Length: 85
Image 1 (cartoon, rainbow, N blue to C red):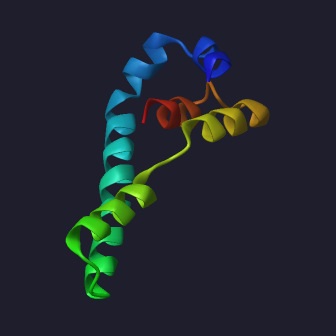
Image 2 (image 1 turned 90 degrees about the vertical axis):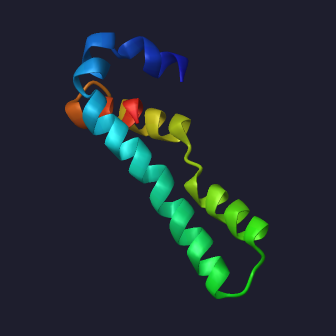
């Protein structure tokens, strides 16, 4: 994560803030709601359904950062947007 952060420039993150914000928001809300909804359909309690939805919403930014660095696309538009999300 430290190396990925050192390769990014703040200006690039600011430029992609709208795309990154939308991707980050949808990347959390969509799996959360889908996980919750499916669990509710199967008759699970609400707190269990929310917990499973949160587990599905969790992402591993460090794995994404390492993959982007290895592919050499960390500073690309897609890479910066993914790291900003």
